[in-house]
Amino acid sequence: MKNSIPTVTTAALKKLIDAETKNLSIKYLKGHPRQYRFDASRGLFNIQGDTPVTKSGKPFSLIPISYRVFKDSLFGTSKRSWLELFFIDDIGAIASVMLHGYSVEHFFNMTQSLFYEDLKITEIKITITPQEKQTAKGDKYFIAEFEHAPADKEYLKIVKENLEGVELYR
Image (cartoon, rainbow, N blue to C red; front, side, top):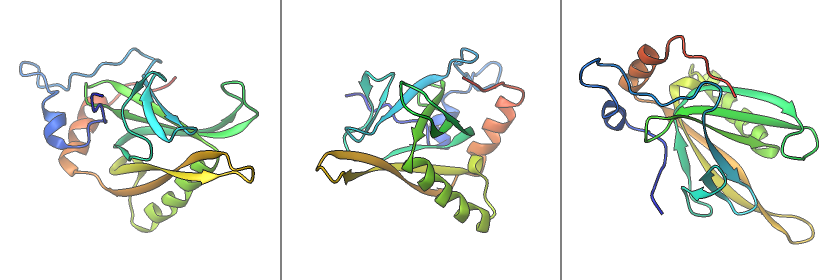
């Protein structure tokens, strides 16, 4: 399994800068970010539902460039709260990952800490770790727990300079 965890270091981001133009080489098909998924039944992250990028219960880290929270009935489910985090991954693609339910509540719990630390969501490195839970019937599932740390200032500067005016949506 190729470890395709999103770019989380300034050194990795600098490798994506074009030598001639000095611009960040970003891959983004407008309105179609590369899709990472959280498989809550197995506790892992994958790309497009096919290519695993973590093992069960192992953390997934990213530095958000944008995010949105909304309610909708996606993927044949009832109406739920959803969180979509946009980030730049290790191949320089603008990507997103969506989470729902209790995971969204855990995200909001983390944002309370950010407020008191004077940090914005787009100024932190988020580590999402699947935590195993069990239903009353004994069925296992996973929810996302969030930890954060301030992102590298040089990384944030490079991203800000190169993504100004880019319309992120799906």
